[in-house]
Length: 102
Image (tube, rainbow, N blue to C red; front, side, top):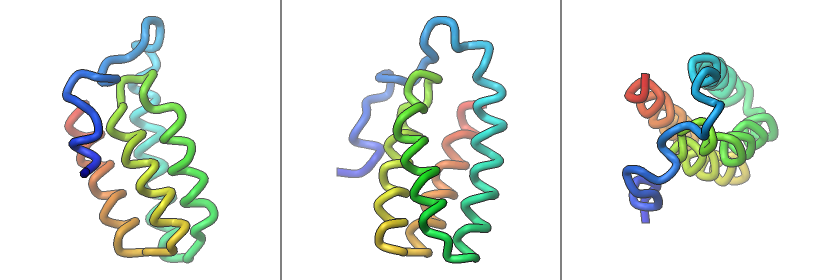
């Protein structure tokens, strides 16, 4: 099952009450994470990549980004496997997803 199939189109895709005002900063912070992960891939710093993926998995849904949480789990797994290509592909997928939500 792909990450797209793991969540339906409405589940967790709207911010929880009271978090709406924080969504723009959430997006900015994730864009910074994308750049960090890309650098960590070059540096082969899979420990830091794993931490970012783990964090996304835990806090994305309340801000209305459930799919990013699923991608975060996948990034965490590819970091454990030290799979640079798969991790890079997932970062691109996450960036496309975030851009679609702007």
